[in-house]
Image (cartoon, rainbow, N blue to C red; front, side, top):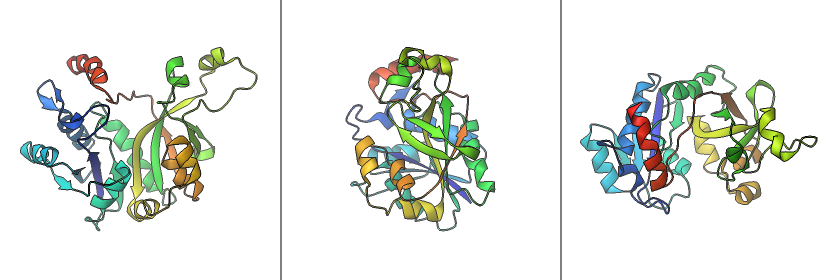
Length: 245
């Protein structure tokens, strides 16, 4: 059984109430939920939230939701709490609640690698095509090794191209943006959320570095599909015209 869990909290510092923000007649969380259902590879979709307003809204449009503790440090921890209520689930997919434009193909792509019993955690990356993305610390980069194994994630532009001027890096087409979509084997999710916070994680504020440092492997698949996350009200205003396409 494969379950997708969408962590959604109300008290975002940059965009309070974001999951309930209106997007052409539907709340953002509903649009995310519907996109996940469209993937066709998910047996159950559940919103994980610590806010009754979000919980009640999900129920109102016919979705499934579960209340969680309010003190989770990350969305992954919130996902793990809900996943523990579904012992029959083998694969857990963590879909960000602020990705209303996520493509169902991307969800299928992150689930597909689990046909290989050696895959414990899977995620996606896409080629970086704009210099502002390459140089922005808000865009997480990843370097892959053989067979798609993630070697390192960073807010800095990696790899460093020693013999190429920084202004020419984007032309080399060697950098990848990590997308915040994960899938885990259920037992692995329980293990990684029990790990103590590591120094690399603290330095870069990237929880996946805790997993790498502890010896877990992360399969990084490639996609050409865009990622349009909503972090601020301004992001939402820019994104709304895309709904008409």
